Length: 132
Length: 132
DNA sequence: CAGAATCCTTTACGATACTG
DNA sequence: CAGTATCGTAAAGGATTCTG
Image (spheres, rainbow over the protein chains, first blue to last red):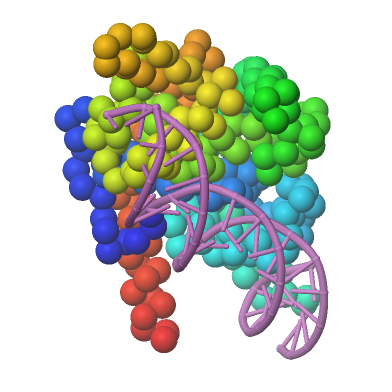
């Protein structure tokens, strides 16, 4: 995954499976913080510290790594303002904005069905404890 | 991530950020094969070998791991048929079916914008080569 | 405060071999 | 063919430190 050298092939007849282009979207969200960070920028550009506080539970380094990768993906852009003191903001590109739709769909799904997933996980966990 | 002990808190006022329940959905898709496997079962139960061939590029072990985890998540269920020879199939649960919507939204997004992401990545890659 | 550089730990992924 | 058991590796996440 994630080698631009191995560019995905064309869409398979069956749909999204195998090396088809739909996997590009799946691969983006396999990085833990992608969805959270993109969603955190939905209302406009933000400073890193502010964004980090809003997200919670992400280290400064990991947020930085994530933002740089999103820049490489063309989803986020960095703005530097030559003020005193200098100010930095990250915002979604037009391409990044288009990703908000699927991310919100996923978030809405979790708000509706997340509890069911948690319950299933706890059920499985209890089952494992019984079995040893 | 992924400790049932640390169950996500309630939704924050800001939306989906931090430890809110929307992250449950994000966390599901951070596993490389979740979206692909769920999507591969969209048309009904399938035998592991068949599913593996349709996906392509996934080892038998990893497919097995993924299916077991999806079982724990309540998204997939295993059917065993006591025939001769015994047959096994995996299919989506009702809960798993509901996840197809967001996954298809993400896939459709990638079909439309995936090229733009690839181009951005290649641009970034070339840039890095120039800089050293 | 932004962010680069280190170092460490974990784990998902993958290859392989073996059992029903 | 389904599934388990090992083992190795690469990469992501995270903590810490230091510099503009």
